[in-house]
Length: 75
Ligand SMILES: [Zn+2]
Image 1: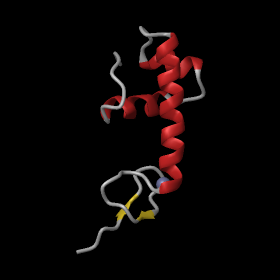
Image 2: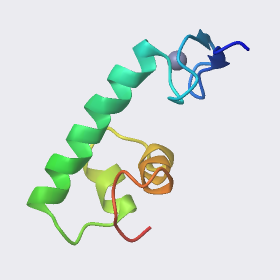
Image 3: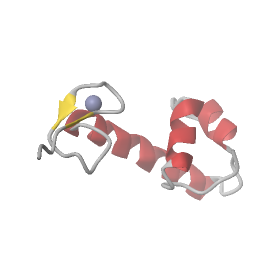
């Protein structure tokens, strides 16, 4: 049984099948997550669109975090 899979972000082969990103994308994913979380601490009623408009994060990426259950806000 092989434990390899493909990164959902860049499509590269990754060693850990349990996570959806390779190491490189995973660290970027975490950075973006912290940035969103920081923004939400300052703006608790923000929507995905507000976050995208006020940070360098794309709305698709914000939506991905919502889908992954990492953040809980209105779309
Ligand atoms: Zn990747």
